[in-house]
Length: 189
Image 1 (cartoon, rainbow, N blue to C red):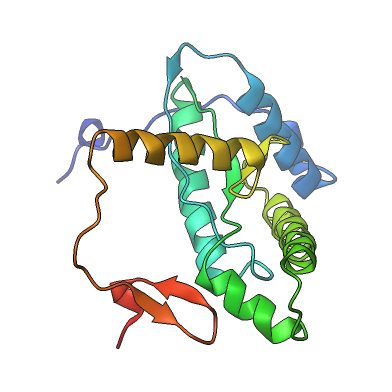
Image 2: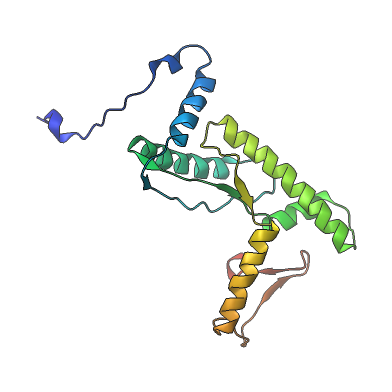
């Protein structure tokens, strides 16, 4: 027969008033207040951002919910969990989806502006969905297409080139003629 001392159950003091009217609204408010509480020890989770190529789907939602559960459990144990959502604004999934939605345009400036509008529209759709699900949500977020991120990436690549970590050699670079973009080895059948 098992004894109660073997089971590791922790006690959490929470406000029972959240279960009255406006349950969903109150639960979000409860977590927002607890999230803003200043704790000493940091727990950082790095978010591999979803592509901004449409509405949030089950893959996005499962990913965010799992991270949210981890962060909320760490908050209950007194950790400070700075979490910044982000969106991947480049890559083949976005290019393919965007190609299906637009007509053939040969002007790259127009394409770039349309792509930015498309990505921002999808980010707002996904943000709204994540917020409605009650996931940890901060007004601060990042986009891989922001100029600050791009300039930082270029600095890092330049540093790699200077240290000769990146060099020219004979290695195949797979190319998609439909997308006019490079492909990874994992995308090749």
